[in-house]
Image (cartoon, rainbow, N blue to C red; front, side, top):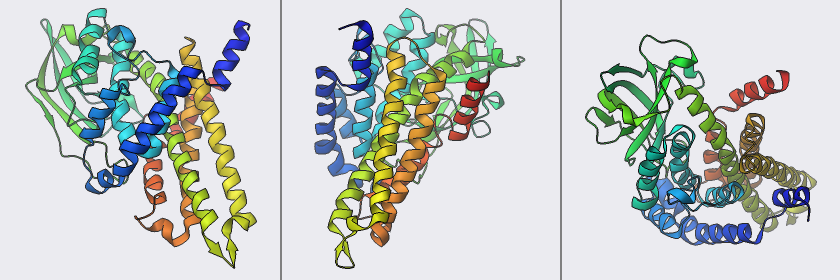
Length: 387
């Protein structure tokens, strides 16, 4: 088989190893997560027991190479795992992949020593990390960051607040983007690894959210936090570049979570539509329902292919900003549309918590918002195609 044929096969057909990984994730999700998803959603509690089992099963720290204790799986396998976990519970999926998101800046901008020390804390000690970018006044507009840092001797002093931080309360360290005092433009930003137990670090109250209730989301405050220069990622002024590259790696995985939500909502809608009778026959006999299900299936498949192309390009060492945004944006919009239509197919029952589609509906919404809103993804895409 030629190299071209091999690559095409890698994009459109799973290898035996990838199929085995997908089966492992699917079995774990159906047996360990799905039966408990409603409990964690209702109680809004962090799924510590599930996270521990994911770690023990080798289904965590998915972005970390084998050299640093990670599973060393390929990017398509990573996406397959995220889809299966999100199908069972998107809150668990978000909590699970927070370590990967926090790992990307270290992998992109960290020294060999930083990678060895901090990534192995995740893979060998089962610790948690959090990616700290968003602020109360700076979401899509990263240039508006107000968290500042100032170099004093061999150390830096950090002040500011980060918000909507996944795993904030359980993280052992944070990867933080801050603005150097007195500097302007994209070169003003510098990235750091900040220990949770450093003096001056505190975590706010856990947020009460519409969806993803199993994930821990809170603010992190930094008050005159002293950071050794050894915990700086990259050179001064390289933080923006490091964080943007990290997001490019992360966005297709948000797309895979969105595909999982959409797939779960779609399967629930198909099953219900086959069982529900109106006018003396199953509602699947109604063309209006048939067309809704057909559109669901078609757009889910298109989303999955966009995600797999984006992660395939990552795997090939040719990361694409355009395709990362394609995948994240299209899959997130699909998840929201599919979940909305699934609620509609259920009718009044779709509005009741006893049925699964209302949770898919609530969880889907954040896919259009976090790690770059879908409006920002369209800005990125337009810039790419017009440049």
